Image 1 (cartoon, rainbow, N blue to C red):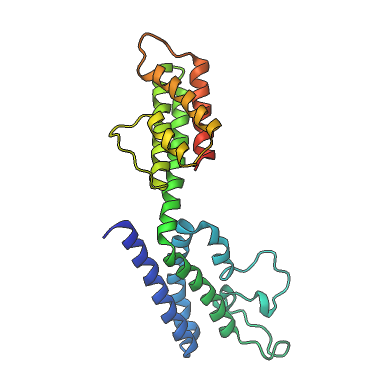
Image 2 (cartoon, helix red, strand yellow):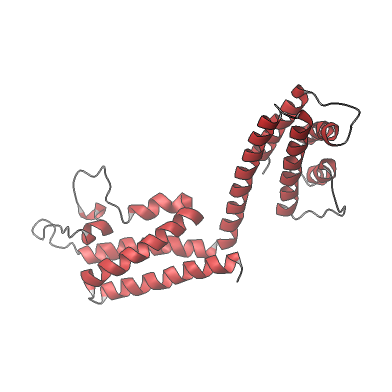
Length: 244
């Protein structure tokens, strides 16, 4: 089973378990069973949402956690944690309020977030891949900066690999075909320019960076300068953050 299938299965399992827990709550099993089952479910679900949908993480938690800024408890800000803590609104003040129905509504909103994640697993995984790649590239650029103090040529060669990797990722993301088996930076940037992924000034900038990289990696009769490799690092940093 590949990563996508594993993640899809885990999200579906959480959704199915959540529906069963909510049904049991509605059918009268109520607090004792819900307290145990929901807490176990929430711990697993929260971790999944945090990793796969960080943009929905705070919203997901808000249906469970009591708002620290809450000054007064009313039906509209009653959350799952209130019920689990045994907090019940006064029947005299709110005679029509049903804590279990309110908690069920909060729980269903959490399930809706999980279902939306299941429907966009491909998109989520692509974003995670991109985020991990950017983190790795940033770390490698930091390594190149430190390497400059020891070997300027080696630092430039490393940055060249970072640029190539980023351009190859762009090629894959935009379904562009490259026939050359071991394409250079220029071999990769040309079709990206032709496909309109970036403009001519950007293409020229990348061509310039490729020239510096070639000095570092291939031209043994010319030594790259510290200024050139600094430009290469700055250019790579701009590229990976702006051309995606």
